Amino acid sequence: MQKTKTKISKASIYQFESFFHLRFLSESISSSYTDKVKLPKISKIFKNSPVNSLEVIHFNSPPSIIPVKFYDKDIKAKYLETNIGSINNIDEDISADQKINVVYSKNKDLSKILGLNKQKYSHVNHFTQLYNYLSGVVDNSDGLSFFIKISSGSFEIMIYNKNEFVFFNTFKIVDENEFLYYTFFVLKNFQSSIKKDKIIFIGKHEIFDNYYNLASKYSRIDFVEDGAHSILNFEDNFFSVINANNIRD
Image (cartoon, rainbow, N blue to C red; front, top):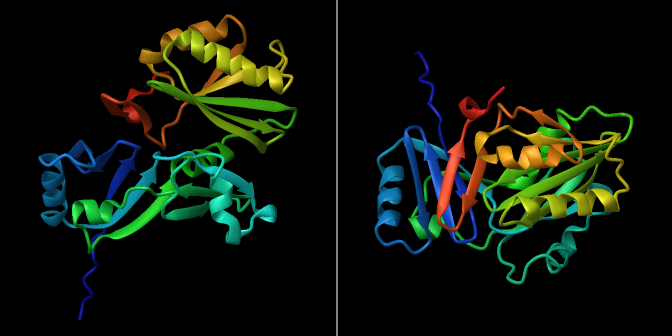
């Protein structure tokens, strides 16, 4: 008898503090956690589709990052106390290279909000995805590498020293001037040489050209074309997903 292979259908949910965004095949929809119109619609999408695997990517709270050799699972809550005020449903990731633990809070239970019981959930923090991606592209044995990922209303900066991760932070910003201030504040603290070191932007998008141009006046810049991961840009009233087709040469 010939065995029938089960086709696995996957969906992704990007979970933010005040809303979440669903991506599944042709479906793409955002909702707050209390929207009485959209929540039933999203729940119906799952019930009427062959989704049996759901990945939740957490942007909803800042993670704490601990080297594996110093990690103590018995004090996970203490790792988060300095980052966030409300701690619920603590989870953790281990990086692909087994070097760091990423601890974060899952403050909203989407399974209850959407009434989902059958889907197989997996959870990952957005930092873990970013770290795993950069660990595969960093190649700088001479010194510091400064990676920046810009979104609407914020940006993230990650620093590697001779291919070893040393720093991560997220900054909320309102314009290019605030971006420049925080960027060079961090670089100065790491005693970066503007003439020697350079800023490497993750992705290259027309909507952020002013940021690139401003940074290029004070530092060398370069780009990593992130063709394997979507770039998320969001603020309270704006959300879009830019896929690999939007990355320019």
